[in-house]
Amino acid sequence: MFYLDPDSPLSLQSQLRQKIVEAIMVGSLAPARRLPSSRKLAAQLGVARNTVVLAYQQLMDEGYLLTRERSGIYVNEDVLARRVSYQVAHTGAAAGAADWSARLRAGPQRAEFQAPPDWQKYPYPLIDGYYDQTLFPVHEWREASRLALGVGEVNAWIHYRGDADDPQLIEAIRTQLLPGRGIQAGDDQVLIMPGIQAARALVARLLVNRGDTVVVEEPGSPTWRALLTGLGARLQPQPLDQEGLCLPEQQSDSRLLVLTPSHQLPTGITMSTGRRQTLLAHAREVDALLIEDDHAGEANYLGQPHPALCGMDQDGRVLYLSSLSTVLSSSLQLAFIVAPAEVIQAARRLRRSLAGAPPRNNQRAMAFFLTLGHYDAFHRRLDTVFRKRWLALRDALNHYLPSLVVTAPSQGGTSYWVNGPEWLDARLLAREAARRGVLVEPVGYYYSGSAHPENSFRLGVTSLDESQIRLGVATLAAVIRDLATGISETLDNCRGERIGGALLKSRLSGAVIHFNTVYGDPASIQLHAAGGMEGQAGYAAEDCDNGEWWVEGDLWYRRWNEWSYGKTLALYVVIDGSEIKWFDADHQLVDAALIQWPAQPG
Image 1 (cartoon, rainbow, N blue to C red):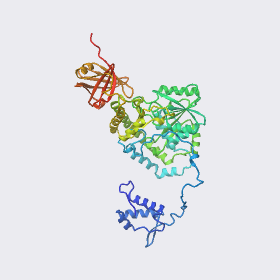
Image 2 (tube, one colour):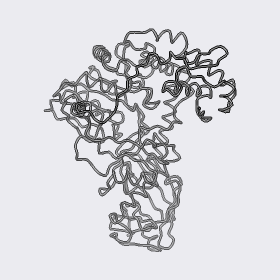
Image 3 (cartoon, one colour):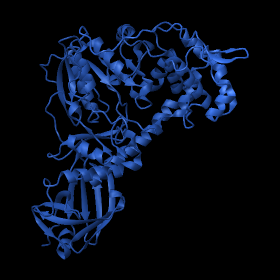
Image 4 (cartoon, rainbow, N blue to C red):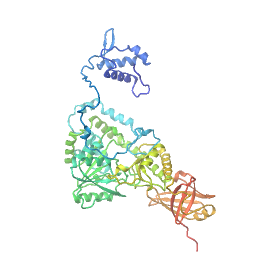
């Protein structure tokens, strides 16, 4: 009659109750039908009789079953008494059927990237924004939820009928989260929202009228573009440079800018302090407002943390959005808005007619999660985990793809924007890489127009362990090199002079090699005649290593102590004027750099 799954997270008793209720509601167990005795059903299911007895008892307490003296247990006939039964014969589309498609407002025309539903089964999901389940703080969240479901707490929130937010959560955000971003706010300047998407939609509805011109980042958030164009706004895409959003021209009639300054979506560029100050001054000059979408928070691994734009604002021109649950779990759907009190008051009225306030029990659970110190500890742990993963991805790109890719300048976060060689089709790369177990994200949909670089893609570290990153990038590098067949330079068709043996050793002794890392930092290698080598990377030579080099036959060997995983590489060498090129055993180009020859004596 029923099947109970021994591997289910539900107990056998809970599963049995669930199966009986389901059978009653769909009609498999008809009203007034007699059920097997507890002894007989237990024998059929292979469970203890007490499991069936307790399941039957709870279902009788809930009114699904009833007992008749000396007769047995039956389905209660009253259970389905209030259900409406109305059947319609489905004979195909009716002649007068409504045409809903003609009434639907047009949505986004360009499809966004969606990871496969089974992305966790891929060995190397190098995609951002999808989180491996090992990161979730199960025990800490259970403690916070248990406290929020205490009798006193339940009585506090179950009878609440207003639209004010949980004062404990507001206080925790105000005193524990915002100071870390350099923001000071009163209780009346914070509004809780049911998720970051709901917060964005509400802010757009609140501030944008049809025909308004809004400055957005290019490339930028497709979500913001869809919200703004759906409200009839005219978008003014502004390009980015190494410091973030470029200022709009003075003649622009835009009075609203949407920004992601901490870690620009999607490039990961961190807006410089100078650019932030310039933007605030520009907003003051033209009487503009700024929406700061702090979707990723502050996670700078290579430099000093920057205060939020809202924290630097002295004129009340910045409306700040952030999420409490993006990394914790998107299923929790909790975010908040910080703005002047009059804005929050208007936003609360609008929230009332849209999504409404998030459930008070979820708000209270998050309040406990914050005040018990779990949120801060969780983010400290995440920063450590993501920093290691982010640096591991950077090192792997530098090792396996030094001549083929360049990343956008970034000081941290959880992703890299990668520019491949000009011939690369990132959509084709994504398809071929997926066949080998590597997931990458094409980036065309981040652009407002059809014109965009076809050779760019994103890589992320939220969805896989640090130990998987190196092999994932090595596999991706193999895919790119396979796609380069017949396009990229090889040892067999390259320009320059191939050298080896004694000539190779004498030519390279004392030379200095200059190049850039994939992340744009200058680097150099000094080759000593005795076989040692010294490497420096960074504008202040902050990353250094030593190693050794030697020649065997026509191959040049090198091995660093720490760089390139301390791995020995054997490479063919070609000299083309002031350029040195290295090729692997398959005659594929590995890297190229400028070479400075040693000064000749006399």
